[in-house]
Amino acid sequence: MKTEQTLDRNEDPITGEPGSHPVGVGVGTAGGAAAGAAIGAVGGPVGAVVGAVIGGVAGAYAGKGVAENIDPTVEAAYWRDNHASQEWATQDTKFDDFEPAYRMGYEGRSNNPDSLWNDNEGGFEKDWDQFKGKSSLNWEKAKQATRAGWHRVEDRLPGDADGDGR
Image (cartoon, rainbow, N blue to C red; front, side, top):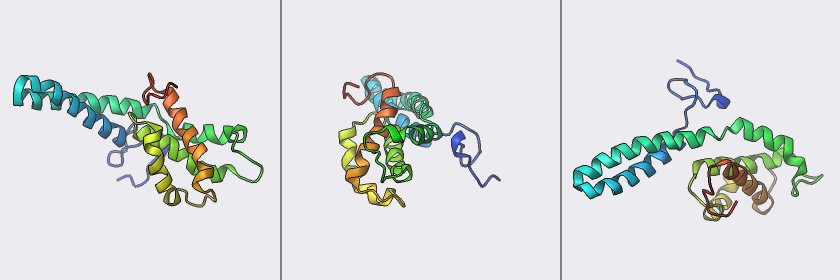
């Protein structure tokens, strides 16, 4: 039995197979099932059940596809390489202080594919002290990096998923 996961392959914790995206699959399944049930309701209760099943399966595949577009290893490397050029980067702050903020943003966007930054900012602020680990940043200093991590992922999704015109 395998006891250690390789994070950059997104391995399934049980089988060890690469490409596991439980959050993306879960979000897609829930959304697809709800949409399928609503569409199937036209055919009565049986139609709603069949629609929910079909919608859930389709949604799971779509959710996995969105999650696969977000590689945490690539995101971490991008921000490590590009942090110094950000307006909030100063001589007295290190990348290591900002790393959890970037991660909170790109993971948060990946986990909330149909959500707006503004709808999540309050939750990020509330969770920052628990999430930041050894970072010395307060939320006000971390917020811009978190938003940047969020929008880097948002910019690579098809369309304007969060409706902010970006």
